[in-house]
Amino acid sequence: MTAPKKKAQISVYLDPDVMKALSAYAARREHSLSLIAEAAIASFLSPDADERREAAIAKRLDQIDRRIARLERDVGISVETIALFIRFWLTTTPPLPEPAAKAARAQAGARYDNFVAALGRRLSQGPSLRQEIPDDIQESKPMDG
Image (cartoon, one colour):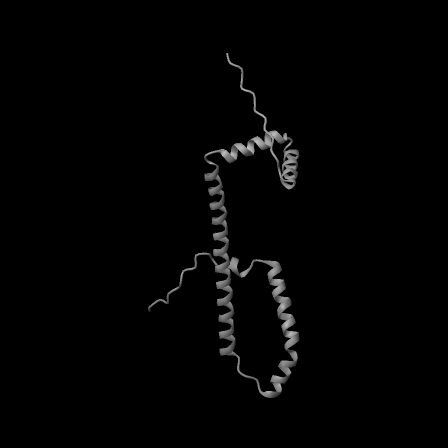
């Protein structure tokens, strides 16, 4: 029967920040510095380390891609909502005669403050407009009849 091989000892010079991080990690995990360093080196030298790293990066990129897609959708909804409102408002609101226009301009600040307060209430309560709109919007085609 052969005796198990003894572990070899090496000396390594570490940057103070790396040493501090290694010590903190070892303390949190309640393991020795040698065990943590050995596991890190083994992982670094492992033939599948690159594949694991690539898989982790791909997973993160997929998450970022989904978030960007949601952002694009939300921005599209916002732009279309504002455009629709402006078009509706411009086509349904007649111009005011001059005395009424002066009074409206005088009230504009208070009306804007009311709008901002209402928007704040809407944003703090949910559900948001984007949650009310399904993700897979299909264009509705007018029915021929």
